Length: 196
Image (cartoon, rainbow, N blue to C red):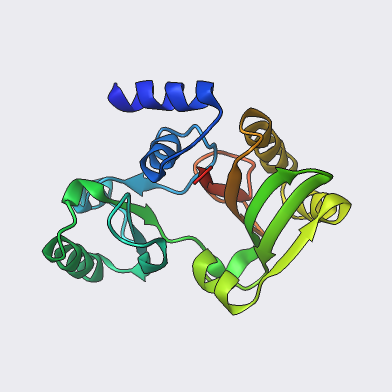
């Protein structure tokens, strides 16, 4: 209930000022298509998921420290380490590992004067690693054209909806060559929306 209230407040304010707010929007499905997600290793186990998972922190661990493509035992070790470093277990989240081999475009997009601005990468690795390895910036018609070419129509409509509602925010996304996520007919997942 508290998460629903916070999500409604953020949606109505048109600003995402803190990372925990973005996580609530993500978890509540307000950002749209997302991978399978869990709030604890117990939830992962109970779901029956036996694939690789990613481990993230809502706060306390830098974004660059996200752990990708871990099996359950490796995830347990990561959680133990993070807790020993002072992170509260309630601030740790998990999601299914995405098919990086099928990535076609990922990065950050936002509205700017003159149209869209895209900071992206074609590297087939988790976003932080891909952007660090080889990135590009493009704006205006070039950004629009690349996004429309890379995103399925429904995914592009989702992107437009989010940027319309949050015109001053940055939106993180990953697009794949096939359908992914928990909503049908989409090839793009939206990771984060932020003004911070």
